Image (cartoon, rainbow, N blue to C red; front, top):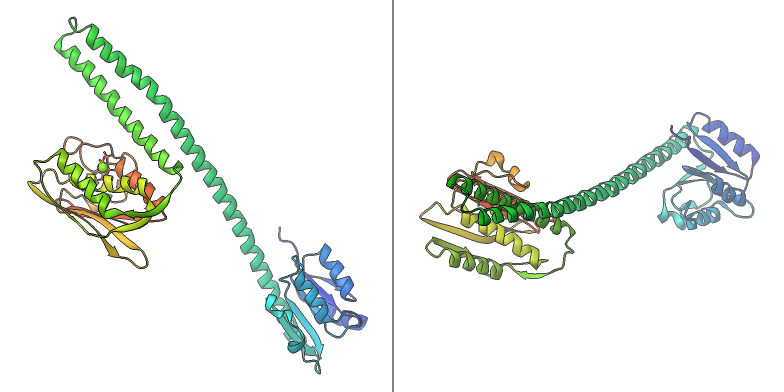
Length: 369
Ligand SMILES: Nc1ncnc2c1ncn2[C@@H]1O[C@H](COP(=O)(O)OP(=O)(O)OP(=O)(O)O)[C@@H](O)[C@H]1O
Ligand SMILES: [Mg+2]
């Protein structure tokens, strides 16, 4: 239901009030009258006005003085005012408070149609202002609701993941115990099956660790400071080469890359992206992995590019969701949690991540912070 808007009219002369009421009868609003400034101020305590029509020349408090008082009150600070004044009054010069809100002037005798259309403009503005305020209120309510919901889901998945780990440890532990204590009684097939159970339990444990890590990022308090991206990328590259020194991979890491970020989380981003580049180039006899930056509009775009297996861009959005993988485990091992983690970290820094790739032609991951 829409509440009827209200117009305040202030004039010390009864005949003027009657005339104004007559003019305003065609306007869709309730008219409230006051015979002097004090009555007008009292009326603003009981009503929410969309516009005020103030006579300038009144005994006691004149229209300008009343307007200044209205501007000083929180409730009426932004009340649009139309001054109705005699032609010999230098109205604009006299009223100093007009910066605070909409003000208009009508010189007597005024054209009724002009007054009505001015009043209608202010009524429309008031209506739109109210609608906007209501929309904003609903939006902020929804935002709070959504935030609560996300937090709830987050702690739910954290708790569940945590609780799942204990039974998994039992499955793995007891299977191992059977393998040890019953070694003599189990045939080859039995041993193999029990080993499969163990491997599956261990993999599930790793998946749960991934989920826990993911929700840890959302809870992690960001501590931003200048981070030397070049240094971290070089460390990650050195570690990868160390672990598989027979691979022929050329790293091209741009010097002087830095960012204002949470070092711990940014390290995880680089470990995941460079780790992926390393993994998805492993089928090639030689590869090249590049880490660098491009000037974006206003924000630096960082990238990690490789010339490995690549992927079909049709699935590019999926990559950043947990457990989504574009390659078979038989070709490349992994759980599909890395890029989901990276995306969360980038988003927590207020940034964006996207990819460009083609099957067999390599992949590039770009992000801002
Ligand atoms: N550099 C890359 N080249 C080609 N494909 C990639 C590359 N990086 C990611 N992908 C594709 O995106 C998928 C998701 O990557 P993500 O890092 O999340 O998982 P993952 O590497 O499979 O497993 P992990 O959780 O161990 O990182 C991968 O399975 C792969 O298909
Ligand atoms: Mg990965």
